[in-house]
Amino acid sequence: MTSPTESTPPSSSIDLRKTVETHWTSAEARDWVTFESTLAEDVVYELPQTRERIRGKEAFLQFYREYPGDWHLRVERIVAEGGQVVTWIHAAVGLEEMYALTFFTGDEEGRITTITDFWPEAYEPPPGREHLVERY
Amino acid sequence: MTSPTESTPPSSSIDLRKTVETHWTSAEARDWVTFESTLAEDVVYELPQTRERIRGKEAFLQFYREYPGDWHLRVERIVAEGGQVVTWIHAAVGLEEMYALTFFTGDEEGRITTITDFWPEAYEPPPGREHLVERY
Image (tube, rainbow over all chains, first blue to last red):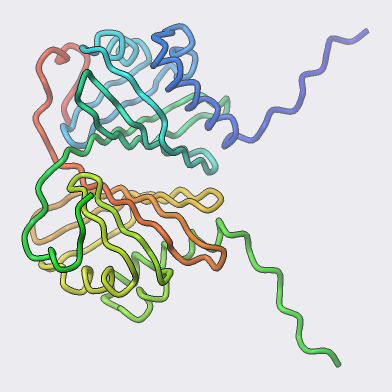
């Protein structure tokens, strides 16, 4: 008998979407073994708002493990195409609630190679457009 | 002879991606006729950071036409799947440069029905993670 044949792997876009879903659920669960498995060895994490960059799986994992506060994450939307995935997540730390917008790219094995994270903050609208907008 | 058969329309995701590309290029060109054609009549625009909402094509078009400053937009990334498209754009107003992250949904005719816009601003990183990050 020959050894069992592996089934055809799904396309990279399907892989990466699944990886990103696992990335967020394992972060929320503080399941760092699973979380680490979603990352390529040389993953690069960037925060354009602070111009911070973290290189490599070990440092990124440590960044998450050390992140202060009782934070909780929930995926609001996920859009995947080819080797790219975007998520819109709801984050809560105590009473503070925020959104994060995250752009992922992946390798051929469906692991995450780049993560670009945006954390937009609330602000007061500029004057002059009250005639067009409502507040919610 | 029968009348010419129309070719099969592309899927809504392809339609909406094309619409969104046209949306940004026509905004940059101040081609308001084309810009308007990308929008469903009852389009809803939301800015979660200010909790502002604009309802309807006319008001949204006016919002853009009246938007102050010599602004310029350039698409950095676009990710489309099904009836959803996400863009990451680079915006410049004079010397100020920013990113915007925008989530679109569309109708069956490939017109934009909802737009959710995020404008993350630069901020200083919190202390305590200097051992893991570099600045760029």
